[in-house]
Picture 1 (cartoon, helix red, strand yellow):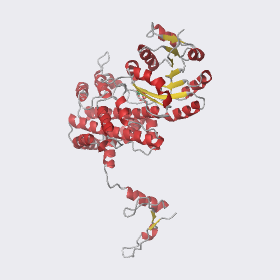
Picture 2 (spheres, rainbow, N blue to C red):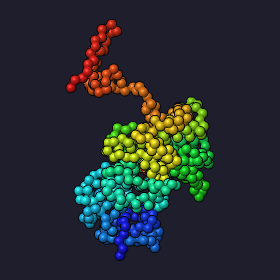
Picture 3 (spheres, rainbow, N blue to C red):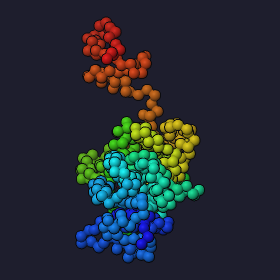
Picture 4 (tube, rainbow, N blue to C red):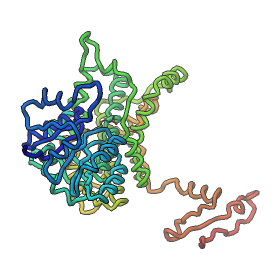
Length: 492
Ligand code: 6PG
């Protein structure tokens, strides 16, 4: 029997849809799903339903799967991230030969991917850490794909991955080789951190439209539809209108019946960990993750609400829908500026040479954060020969300047009304901190030196020259006490 081009392990919805997508591009696909006692064999179920009559080859053991593949074998794992990936690699390893390629298409932690790549490369096996975004629909019709690892295998896997990816109108595939080792999964992690920020910012706009502007469902939906025709055009804004309009059979709005306890699978947290590892401020994503944590503590929030029912009953500033639009847009720009800065810092940390323009381009379609806005970011980074924070660019500088008065009005109004806008506020605070030429960190340095002799640098001495002061000798008993010059450069 003719050997298959690729094997796919894991027939949950993402795996099924990717299998259908790959097959539809003319590839022969072998399928395997772990046998679960008491449940029907997933491969048979798939082949008897959506997979019927297509070029799939069912396999019922890893030996059969591996045996059915052309060399070098390519095996795409669409299984739960974490231990299952380690277990599957361990099970596959004795069956594989030098040069074979495992593609991990799940949301794996890039640090796990690096560890696995190192272990596998010692045996001559390649592991491609492959971020895939787009949900079920994307998997079927064209996701955004972020493969990374040893570039020698890119010729083996890129043609297939680019064939199944989303394509821009000019034909550019939303899939490109990201870089070495765990870069593909790190880039997907940052994508998800940005996704968390986008979702939280949109939720905060919804909160203001509902609570402050007292809009009904239809009005809110119309606002999001209008926003989706302008600079905010994106997949996430686009799905918000139908979500707000959706009614159950009895006529009630589903959104009002969905519990306000948000869950998460971990990529947002890893994104913040990457920010911590690379000393990169990432306030918007961090607040978005924390907001999800807090949302899950419903009982505590309910009790706190009873204890503090009204933060400030005073009348608050008037806001219009345009103010909310501008605040959302400016916050989004800030969130992406932080996200792309994190990509750059991580790229420096690991020497990955990530191409930020390419990343923005492959996120323009197929993925959850796809938007019109990413086209502007791709253009900025294509035109700028070297890395600069996004807000240095004249295009975004102009946008921020236009939005700034509304941005401040929205945050001020919400703060005085006691409406929590953690991500919008974090974005504005991040912006003000970033553009602050004189920060109050001089006092922090003084305090560190005061209590722990941690040394400080001076404005009147070159950077890197460290000083220590014996602060106790400076505390005047009274104003008449003479002061002596006791600052001295620190000598190691
Ligand atoms: C994507 C998504 C996807 C992610 C879900 C849920 O790009 O297709 O990021 O990979 O798993 O969005 O993530 P949380 O459960 O953490 O919200």
